Length: 100
Image 1: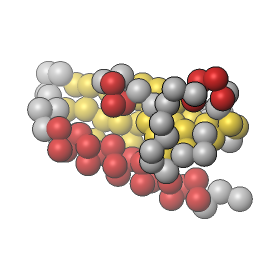
Image 2 (image 1 turned 135 degrees about the horizontal axis):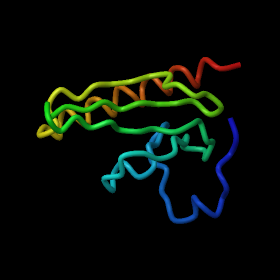
Image 3 (image 1 turned 45 degrees about the vertical axis):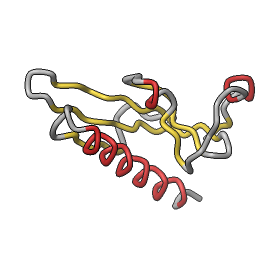
């Protein structure tokens, strides 16, 4: 893992142990950064508008395939979207804390 450049974090508050950068602004992808500014990888959201579902993915730095994914069964439910994001962040945090 590598630290993200300080100039990118000057205007961002890293409130959570794991932060999905841009998610609160409605982005569909972005960086995953720890509270300490450590870059862990990227996140993305694949939306299936026909079925009104979606999936969040986390891809660790240096890897090509997602390490973790969480589904959102109904896009119209903000609570279920938040729950999926929370589960993804928990999986990333557990994985990160288990790294040597």
